Length: 88
Image 1 (cartoon, rainbow, N blue to C red):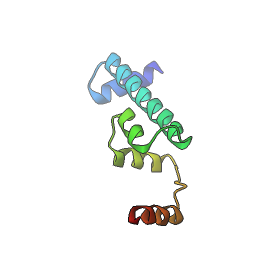
Image 2: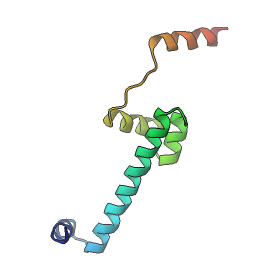
Image 3: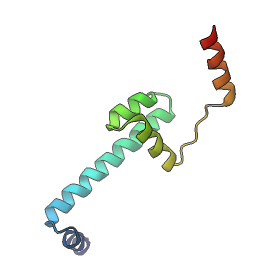
Image 4: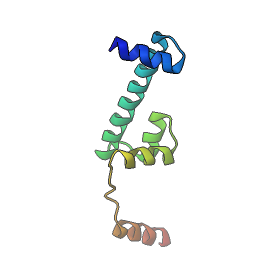
């Protein structure tokens, strides 16, 4: 592992400590995003809240969700129902 850290540090032209900090920061961000995605899938938070909690835009969090394999359960029937509600 140290050898790999040294290799990354050499490639990035930074010291090993900087590489470690960067990798930890990325791991924390990925963990937060995965936790938020789970909460969203469970219906505990909205897409807006998911974006806010991760510091991303709604479009960015949607893109992340797609990359992670998330499939919406929102159907055309749901859309039609909401359109009818807006007309009322």
